[in-house]
Length: 155
Image (tube, rainbow, N blue to C red; front, side):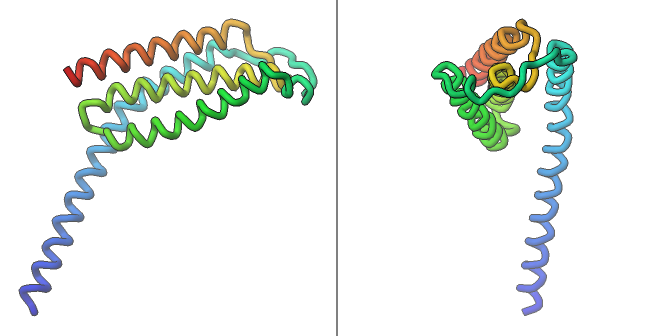
């Protein structure tokens, strides 16, 4: 009985060490991941600048066909951000981790661009006209770089 107890306690201690090592690796990895994200968020804040005067909130503008398509794209892009985050967490530390990081950031750009369009349609705030196309351009660049990283990792 005593040897079984010792084996169980030893197994639990080794599992705790492995878990602690994984946590420490993920914490040190997240420090590297957050730096480009922080720089990117600061760049977006500079592009958006201070909001200009916006029209009053109008529900009628949100029910037009183009606005509904933009709202659907906003919803899908937000869902895609969460799915990409889950995939990134699954491949973290793997060969495809860097490419999924760029796909994730690109999806955030898409969601922000669609939110800017939604807020302009709803009259919440008016962003500079260059903000939405610039975010879409940055999204495409991140996706291209992510695809190149995936190609590099796989072949």
